[in-house]
Image 1 (cartoon, rainbow over the protein chains, first blue to last red):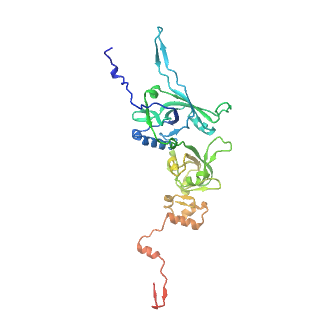
Image 2: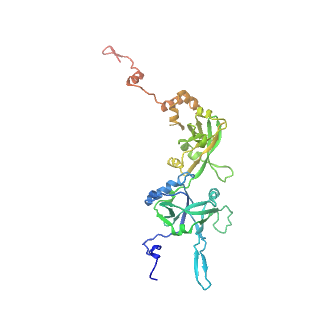
Image 3: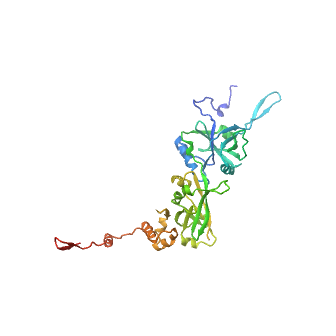
Length: 315
Length: 73
């Protein structure tokens, strides 16, 4: 066959030394955002961006949600669909989509949090045991592979195998092309532990005397006694940070906060709103107390924490 | 500004009077003297001129000079 059109549609078949291949999966991270070209210009910039993104609010577009270190992996990819002709020819008709299940350690509270992602269409970044991040690209932006994920756990251990405290995640990728033909990698020498998963900490209404509100800070969880109060660890540091408040449409009308103090008896914050502005609110109107961002908290050594705003009512 | 563990909103209280500050933050159980101290830290006294500053300085007391038998200031 001396006349060929292949040259316009195929690549040469040489290989560079040290061509990257996917190693043993070590970590997964849910990442629905993108990393612009300027942020993966080199390894350090890329890794710093992941660290920064892990400390964003969970509502931020580029939030990076790291999952725990993987302890077991099983490949469950769909087999290629094959076709045959009755004289013996056999070929691949469709490439099977990649899938796997992974197991990592986590308790009842983490399981509850992870199950909020069940069957959601998300994007995943893979990190292998060779210290290489894997994902794909759209345009010049580095993104995760599109996938669906489901978390399973919380069953009694049988005592026959390592089962106690294990969470299983079933991962199914939506596009074989994206995963196999359009993969991109980024090496890293950074310490993965710097990529920090955050905990939701709810600001909660306790009581108020007109414009002076008592506000709790608790981590919701499975302990029947109640949520975990972070006051003893971080109350004073948080009280020293800047909060804002607003009422009206989208809570966009500023309601000045005149002071924030710790209440060592109730183990909460005392938040005082400007009495004139507070009195001017209509009876029963709702307003929102906005905490400092996770990055601000992190800078104040209140690490691994995202305070969530609370809606309060004039009363 | 943080005073005895209480974070006061300086920008807010800079625009208010001392009486408003004391009325608005009295629930922190600071004494009135301490409240006035906080307010003065947020709103330090402003001098309009050197003469103004001089006027507010305490006057030197007259002392007896046994050698010269005169009074100096």
